[in-house]
Image 1 (cartoon, rainbow, N blue to C red):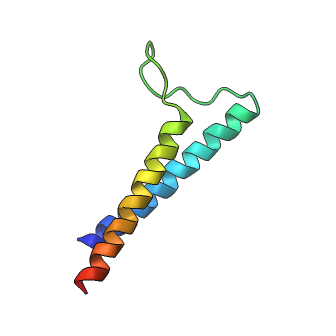
Image 2 (image 1 turned 90 degrees about the vertical axis):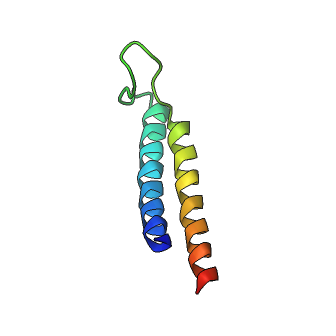
Length: 71
């Protein structure tokens, strides 16, 4: 189970990081990134994807450490 969480957390972290970098590059070149969220509400910021990437990478590391301790 820990191995599956580790792999899943890693790939979700990579996806979140890629989206954050793409959105940040769009903002740097003054291109409006795609609007994520409700039409009348606030959009999701690239910072949210950076925080998500950090969370998933930490999940991956913690799962790997848990797997190593049990072995």
